[in-house]
Amino acid sequence: MRPVIPYVTAGLLFGLGVYGVLRRRNAVLVLMAVELMLNAVNLILVTADTSVRAQLPHGGQVFALFVIVLAAAEIGVGLAIVLQLYRLRASVAVDEVPLTERPPTARPAGVAAGTAARPGIEARPGSAAGTAARPGPDRPEGER
Figure 1 (cartoon, helix red, strand yellow):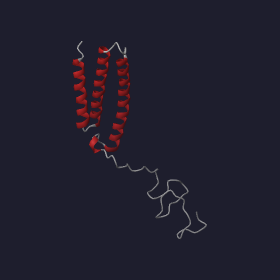
Figure 2 (cartoon, helix red, strand yellow):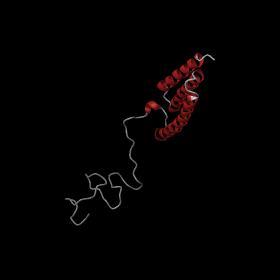
Figure 3 (cartoon, helix red, strand yellow):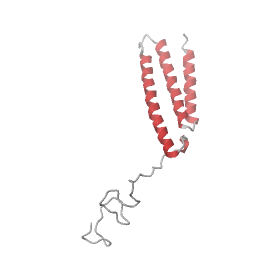
């Protein structure tokens, strides 16, 4: 077997995967492009294993098995992230994901904005929510 053909095929697959990662907007298609790149690496590992068997017997096949496990874990985590992105944004477009914006914090049910989240502690106007109420000009000394 000539090892040139699998190497060229793996190079084409890897190039197609890189193009897909750089040019696609859909997160699912980006994950598919990453899978193409991992399959190209598997093809190179198995081809190298068959052509250079004397130095390291079955080394490429073992590494290919690790890459397959890595690909399965990547798809599991990647699809979970994509589903969460779809739930938050109703879109899986990668270029619309804000990298600096933080999502609003969730408040417990029945707690209005500007009030403390813990029962028994009231927030004064102008103070940070969640801090203990201290006696001040608007609150008598005996009341806490």
